[in-house]
Image (cartoon, rainbow, N blue to C red; front, side):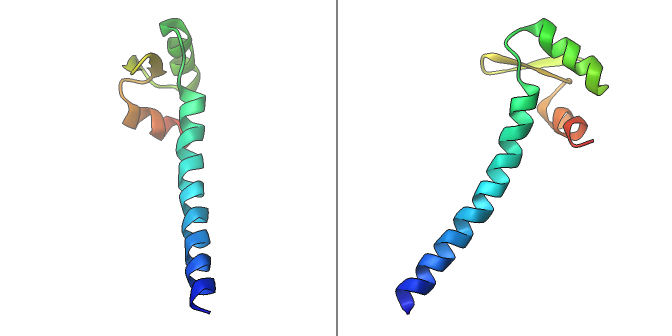
Length: 73
């Protein structure tokens, strides 16, 4: 019984972890671009200003916090 309960808790944890990860991943899939021009175009489409670089990709809006606000609209 103890093993079943422990496994159940583990699967519940994984389930909630996957929900959070998927939302974050989706935002990044919709918000990262290889070129500055693509990021600028997307910024105009979603209504924010500016672009910024995140590692080797370009993202619309002046920072990532602002981007996430616009992607949730």
